[in-house]
Length: 214
Image (cartoon, rainbow, N blue to C red):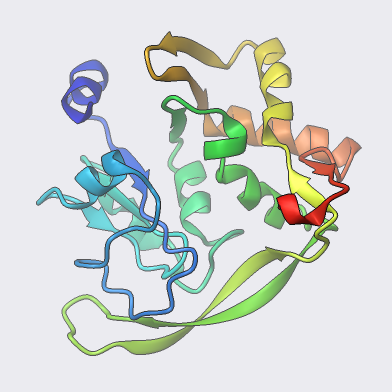
């Protein structure tokens, strides 16, 4: 899959993949720590010899290509919101590609937009983690700001953005053997979603009756 992407995008493209550690409390070593449930493709990219990995102990990413080190601009103490990896991707005009899944499953960027717009069903918390700085062997404590769910009556429903993006004409879709895939420039996803959330702060969620399904 990686070779196919490079063949399609060209050698001057930069590919970034999630290497998240959502429930991990062990020391995070960007060079060694495997991602948590980010998939085999992400793990493959993370382990490439030319891969660069960002430092946030929760929502970090691995990237390869000419602009891979743009992630050096990210603040490791911010999981979502201004200064995070997601902000760096937006500033560098990345395109979000979802391979075989929709926005509810792979659209983590929308959590970033919830943080930017101060979604009423989430709130800021501080998570204490351990980070092994580059070139070091001993971990150091780090406090990461995370925009967590506070109202468990609501669950994300990110697929609601799909028909809106179709109307904009910016969404590309493809039927593949392992499921439908999507591609959307982040600036288009950002602009369209912000407009919808400005009209309805609860646009990206649905209310659930049985909290056990969350």
